[in-house]
Length: 400
Image 1 (spheres, one colour):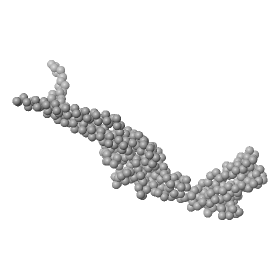
Image 2 (tube, one colour):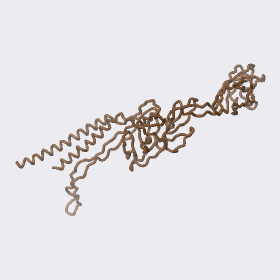
Image 3 (tube, one colour):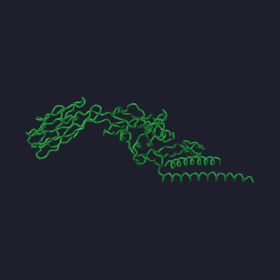
Image 4 (cartoon, helix red, strand yellow):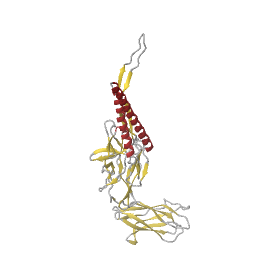
């Protein structure tokens, strides 16, 4: 009779643990990146009353006779199914679509998380709410080295990039072969330091359907700058490369060429324009964006874009082998396998969504159902103990 008492106690303990797991799931229904836990039970040892026996010439075989001794907790497994997206439109909020974990530095210890609610600290480092540094690959002068040295990602406010010198000025539009008026286009060019110069370019009709093209000194519009060129057209008004020559000029030691190939020579209208100028002024970081591949791209005041870094993501052979450390982070264990560090979108790693967070994957309907199951099972096991006590009481009463 004492067996049933202890069996009932094991049922109470097991279902109390089930209620603990369910309550933790419900408590974290709004926790970013939280993964539901599911409890797995297994029976305990069984008492052998009669061993199995093989058949003989005079009798058949015997099955073993056993009485179970209760239940115990086998495992608490996590459900790493994808959580829903919560759009925040905050540039540093990140979500992983698919497998993988963000890699964080917790005081020199590498830990992992699905919670992407990151911010920038006073030094411009990307950190989580507990100050753990987000790990990745820092770009050098806009160049990323795939699987380079893993380190902290820094996005400094006021970060600047140098200017780039202009080498080619592209002009285009239409020039009337019968035109007689002098035309002017102003092109903004840059020297090696990124300083800007507004260079007037004069187009003068030669009277034979061609135009002379001459750059002028920005400081003196009457002074020619560099070597003049010519733009010519065939009988259909198309640019004639063989009869045309490109003008060149020098600004602060930088040689520049004027590309005339985008001109047309149709009768009746003239409208020269600056189509393109390479080179740019120095710029400072205005904002940044994080793409699906985890690349952090800076957008600068001069309109240029440059890679600043790339997030590192980790995968494991056995994610259920990870150990929770609190603060929504995990650490690797002997059964999780070593972390496989990679980048988003490669090697089975998911993609990154910027401006969104992964919500908890807790299903409240399922959790409340599990709560009822745990409650009723606990109640049933308590009835076993009560009934066993009543039987024991009857035994005691026999002596009377």
